[in-house]
Figure 1 (cartoon, rainbow, N blue to C red):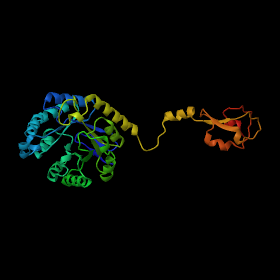
Figure 2 (cartoon, helix red, strand yellow; figure 1 turned 180 degrees about the horizontal axis):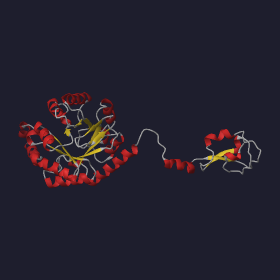
Figure 3 (cartoon, rainbow, N blue to C red; figure 1 turned 90 degrees about the vertical axis):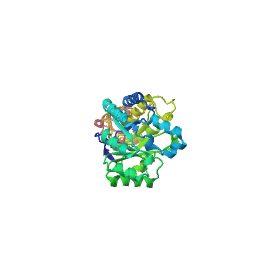
Figure 4 (cartoon, rainbow, N blue to C red; figure 1 turned 180 degrees about the vertical axis):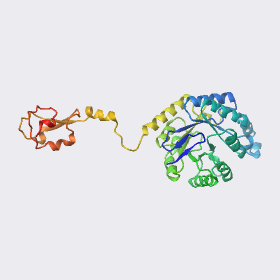
Length: 343
């Protein structure tokens, strides 16, 4: 199973304590006050990291696209954060004791994220899986990488991992992802987490959750997901990019708590009988008892014996060993038989 260490020393592994990333995307609406409140909410919810998007108008779409879609350009400019604003958010995350990361869309943004913001990992968007030059540039940084796999076929994921590794990236987390916003439960195929783990045993496998609610994320943890990425919003009723499928703070906190409980409930593969269960044996298991009055000197037959609670006497799995033995004292009916009563 995959195991890596982020730049801040956090260990990420399959079936380990799940690492929670609160994805802000553009739900801050370009307002740093809202962005800080979202960081506060993610911290309160128990998340490990808050992730932003580093896109700008020039790094996301082409000029020809904007000519045909001028509203898109205005939207991107309004909701993107400038480098100095992202650095401000990184500093605020540090102040709050929560990790900061972002998804870069240009080499310049990669440099800023790693050199200025000191992010614990670089997040690579699903859209970059078939972008070898960009993957190679990120791989040369030698930093831990989280790669989303939405829209990608297995062969494309294999090529992307190979490119990153050949470029010098030895620590890669893969996120199973369905790039539909929101994604319906029947389209999620969470067993892809298992499939990716089998195909990429050196990479911890996580889940980028674009469904509504918490069920898919909780189930992913039950499958051993190493990292859960979930969109956060302060108000899901507001119109915005992916905002309607994002999770509000109280719900996110509940999800994180349940996921962590699920992780600890999974426990170990080895069978463990607790000390408390050994005590329960005395109360809940059965012991051999007599079915009639047995007179001293009589030889026990099968029909003379039954098993009833409590479990402090001779265990039921020894009943057959008592047949043919002789009573050395009188034994009352429906009484627990003691070893000392038999020859």
